Length: 199
Length: 271
Length: 141
Image 1 (cartoon, rainbow over the protein chains, first blue to last red):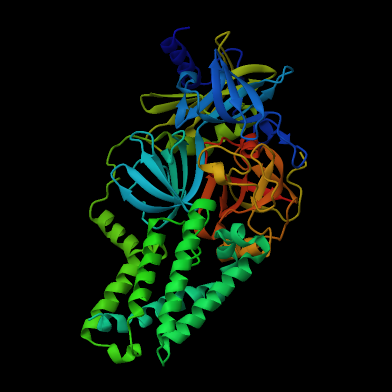
Image 2 (image 1 turned 180 degrees about the vertical axis):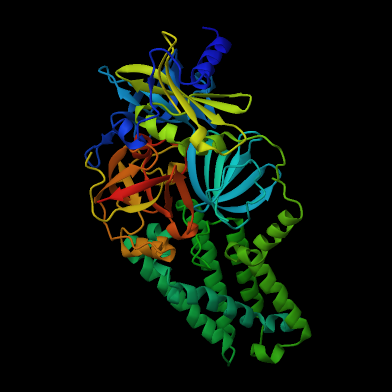
């Protein structure tokens, strides 16, 4: 199905109302009883077999070859059902060799990971703002300097649970922030997705 | 000619060593500072705190003899030796343990940078000048020496990352308050805002155990933002499509449908 | 399913951190305060893992009376957004609770205040998306 038709179909499915032949209506069920949430147990210290981490060394077709930081080698399959995050939800063709990656999915019998979700270059930094200039935050991350780039149309600020907004003028030099962003490989620079700040 | 500026150097160096030695000996976070410095790799993990405190005690002792009368030339010479030794330590830290903190003048973690070297150089130069003094510093106090001391203390603070909170950060705050470079007056709704609303919605809580992927795709339809996830429903792969109000915060109005894209059929709808 | 069954759970904000061998700005993270931490195992950082740790994180300054739990202790962490639960063992000290006293995160009517626990990426991604930086959770021993 062409992409515009597909989107039109998906939009109409959710916006078309509840009168869909053959579909089950969820409305009467209490949230907690609708479906059981899974519990994930793993022996302390054991590696999660359904998770992979590392740098991408090669891309062939829909397969990512990943060299784990602990020297393990992973093969990660990305399908049309896999979500790809790289600063924002994006598509497979945005993934590049040299990118860092976290992936979650299901381990297949041949040892490869069929990914449900991959997060490319994602970082989570607790840092202090040391300076602000046009389009950039200068951050002190455990004594290391990190430059955070503001990406117009993407970067959002959350000030203590207020709804996220694109206006970053509430950020203050000297204050601690949490930054979710996308690392620019082999630099000390990140593009900022969300910055969480106190008031 | 060098006598008047030389005469007050013991006061400047003594004050600096009081600050530095006091923090090393009496600071509540001395253990953490010692562990983060280059001392563990220089003298071993077990002896780092002892070496850190010993250095602090030496600095305090030297500060005492520099500040109290009588004045001996050997005091300034000892300060020169300490300064040169510290420059050597910084060089070692930069080469052998580049990630370590300098452990210098505060409990804050401050990596070794050019400012650390410049500051140690300043103190060493002041100590060298101090060797030219021939009397106790109190006798040399005057308007000229006061200006010199203020300039030296200002230079010391300017070169100390630990003191940035006193002057540099307030200065930067003032500049930003006058002209905030990151103010954004656009009406664009960030995706994060829609995600917050989605997470707060009953619709999301109803189907979230079925979701397998992160956010896969999003687009806007007039006043609604559509968000798609991969889900698993009764053993088959499906797409969970959420419709979130774009410009209003109304989580209870978020709608959801579970769709089988291969057969173009809707499996489940919820409001 | 057996996760939320203790008498005195803690409710707070959860985030994620990297440790062990890692790439990017995480590269210098090391094995954590317990020396065993790595991003691919289900582990966590806890603000009251030792005296030295408590002196840094100071959850008491945000009004949080967290129990002392040391390296290897297992918690059950349940997402207030999805209801999913993961078991994690303590491998590091953190988060820096007192830097963000009073901060709140909600999922629906379930809200949680103060940063009480950080999970490794493998554990966090089992119950939430890594692109959400903060999430409200229930913590049981």
